[in-house]
Amino acid sequence: MSQLRYWIWLTTIPGVSLRTQLRLIEHFGAPEAVFLADREALTEAGPLSEQEQNALSCRDFRIADQVLEDCRREKISILTIQDAAYPQRLRAIDMPPLVLYYQGTLLAFDALPAITVVGSRNASGYGLMTAKQLGFQMAACGGVVVSGAAKGIDSLALEGALSTGAPVAAVLGNGLDIVYPYEAKSLYADVRRQGCLISEYVPGTKPLSGNFPRRNRIMSGLSLGVLVVEAPQRSGSLITASLANEQGRDVFAVPGTIDTAAFIGSNGLIQEGAKLVTTGWDILSEYE
Image (cartoon, rainbow, N blue to C red; front, side, top):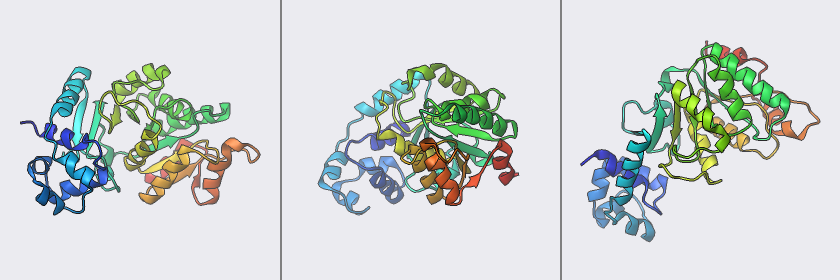
């Protein structure tokens, strides 16, 4: 039986947290051993709620088999945390995903100066222009732009990098068979052709709001640093910057006008120690 069935079985069980899944893999060594363990053996790995015990006692492969079929149909590749190609940078973070789904060519992230670019979905003209320009400059300097493919800063940074012919990566908060937002359909295709689309979510997963903060830890985890181009005071980009700090990554920010609410968050990062950048080389020179 394919080991992937066991990995997908474990990671798609409703009511079993990722932290519990990671603990079980650390204890048993493989998802097949988790599948075969009885209740007593499972509790030896650490405390389990009644809900988790009941969920883990379900030996049903229907969801796993459907996911494998969907991946085959959509040409989605699957990578587990124990595979050699799984990025070591990502494996080292708190709460790394046990399974990644990707389309395109998986990049050798550990050997590349990957930089995550984030910012407002409703960015100003200045922010959009700057994101595209910095994406282009970083890629032209040998960097790999990682972003979330959301409208606004994310998309423009990817477009700038793609225009150089360099590889890029987009990490999604939904299944790889769903385009969100729909206007990003051609961007998805370009990223897939020139790099890779990545998600921890199985095909068919809708872009629910709670998926995106969780997705952000993967973007920063794959990268050496995070660049915030434009972010107001309350922004998901600041969550990504905070995660980058926790993961020991560098944080960079583009300065904005001091009397504009759209830049309060990104200017605040500079006040707190993020490196102020005005060109792509300001970032890539850190890893020369």
